Image: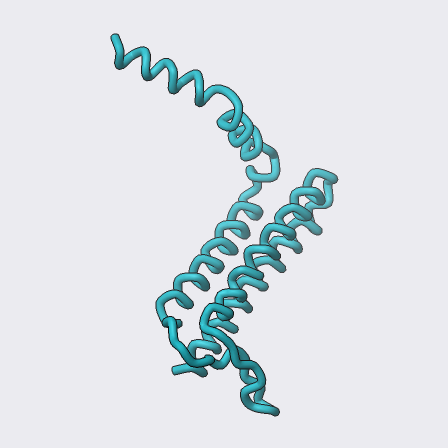
Length: 140
């Protein structure tokens, strides 16, 4: 009796407010496209890989680490170990902006522009992953 009342309460909560908004957001035509889904998933996985790789290899240290290396001038940027994590943070910001713009173009029947923005997002994420790998290699 009590168990069924608790279940009914949770069903009522799930059927209102945030639950409906989240379901209706992901029920859009935009998220039914396989191209869109794959590009978003690959971008998210690339950004997560960036965070994980940096968290594994960059350890807290008291001295400055190399943040950027240039072939012509050598080391041109030193900084705190926490500053390395700006790479994936910038990736998240660009991901959010490009997803918003991509959804806008997709809703206005500009599918190719939407796909190009998502592809650019994936390329940005992969470039940031390569940059993070370079920072790790130069410091070890």
